[in-house]
Image 1: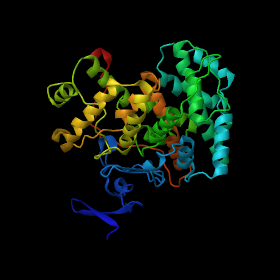
Image 2: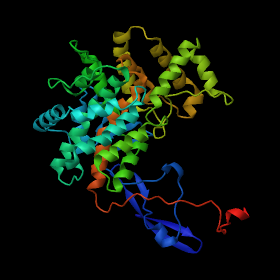
Image 3: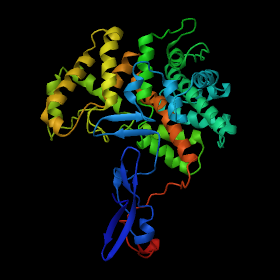
Image 4: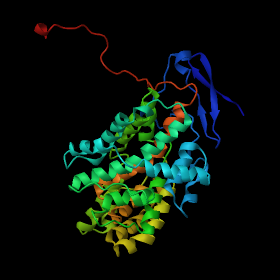
Length: 428
């Protein structure tokens, strides 16, 4: 087996190293290509370009495999615990009992926001997009915790991570309450991560929301399944921003902005909109699929297909099973779930979708589940951000402490005007 690739450019032959990952992935190392040949590679969207080596998450899109630090995602379904998975991603191994207790304690004690931050919420309009508020307030955290800007010590980094993971749910809940004109509800130190978040979302003065166990488990699983997904758009953004030396808060705030896009974090909103259009438009799933297959139609089947997965998205399988169990108990006979089930049946049996490898993805069921839990549609992407934050933190730290890291600076192929003279305004 050779460890070199040979590139022929005219009469010249250049040898390039081959990097082999722990799961057998292969990459041609082109970091010296421009220096040796004067050429660069062109890869819009970076679909064939590896930006880093990482030990955090492994995906095999053809086989439908997703693993966090080597552990299959399916292993977290029996007793979903978002805090445990957050520690795994950030620290590299499952926590011991003592480590987990200490981390849980930190998530509880750091949940409150500085009282000065409450006034900043009041400066936002009631109809401000929650993702805009989330990004702004994560950046604002860096103003209240300047001691965490420079993170070189691992212990200090873990404290910063716990602060951010704890406070993001408080920010999210306050953003929701502000949009409804409701009083802010303080975190309850007696509650765990997910029940505490839902308490801050839905409790009223003198009437506390009590989180059912099935909702707690489902929400934990949703957050876990969104916790990391390799070099996606928002994670790559965190790495790019972090490569400049930007602090953890600024880098994660940039990740929120990237996730805000409808092609990334907003996809589950599009799925729910599609299901509601079918239901309220008195269409059948068959009618909608027919329109989606029509090249002249602008209708798209949302929640199917994935940039990476060319097989069934394992996250979709897990959420589909959860939806089957809890939706009838939360909202009785849900017509949107019935429509979703039928769309899935059609897509899995129709050669049009099979040939194109358009299988249900994680967004297909997550929106239905969040809706059943009482989460409004404009908060769906915020929920995605809460889940994805541990992955962003893990990637920021991996890059920060890595050797030979350079500031991200892609090249381009210029296609504009060649050199021409400046013409004075009176001669134009």
